Length: 293
Image (cartoon, rainbow, N blue to C red; front, side):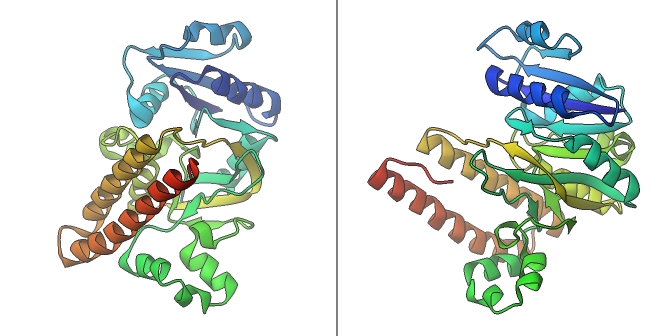
């Protein structure tokens, strides 16, 4: 059985659409849905049960964040496979069954993720490489990867360099859809998802921890879900979120490489890129009044 864990925090309509899609499309596997409400104030979470009476509703008296909320849901889960599914996603086919077959047939898999699109059909860059000095430099000086054959460039760089049109192993996956064996948590610190980050970059951290334990993470192009991923409506909040992500990315690299010369060189390159990107976002907003991702 698959235990599908969804976190709700003041997104009642989005979450209801997500739940509706799970019950509509999931057919080839037994499943349960666990909804963790992270102390929402928008609406009584008990209202979910009016439409979804089979739902396991878990109420938290405080906002535990993404990792904390999922750990709370996992404690209530009965399945031997777990799916972390964002509340702003919608299935449009039996993606859970398709992903489960992949997890069961591939050897030594940690996490399985799937192809995602924005509501307008544009693909999201959900299969990634871990950040490194070489990756950052190649991304900064894009004429270098441009000289590579297209397939080689896509596989080496992934992210925005990859069309997400074929399945492959990757370093880490977007946490909006993460399927894994419950037994994987037995190998994790404290036998749970690492919750050192309240929000942002948890997915990268978990995939890294799976890799350290001899697992590989797998991007599945054979099924696609819609991921709204609308971001913040405030430029200040969006830039604040990017700053949080930047700090967490550095913490992950420090964990992987230590606090030596590699870390400091990386920090300079990565910091320059982030500062430039955020400055462009700010000036574009001032000129047009529109946010860019």
